[in-house]
Amino acid sequence: MRRLFDFECSHSHRHEAMVSLGVRTVSCPTCGCPAQRLISAPRAQLEGISGDFPSAADKWVQRRESHMKKERKNIANHGTYR
Image (cartoon, rainbow, N blue to C red; front, side, top):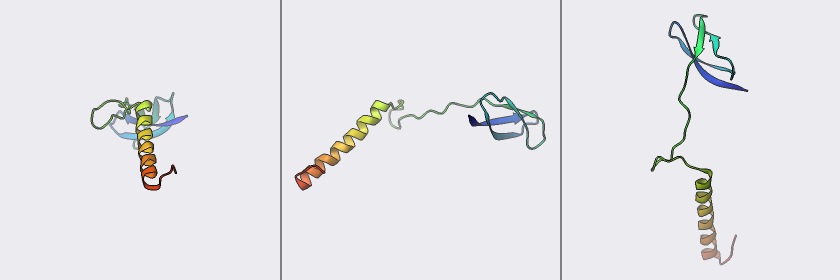
């Protein structure tokens, strides 16, 4: 599996490259020197208001509540479930 990583050479040229997970060095496209893979921050998604990590259960509850709201509206408007 290939992933996108950031690399930097000894001349401070930075670039991105799509490489396999085990690859730690590539050649710099600017100067040709070996470029080392940089450590990058992990990607995390926080909930906007509280800053908590959303869980799958929370997402399910939100989707279920939205669905139930639509069902209640349909029943009120049409007298039946649609």
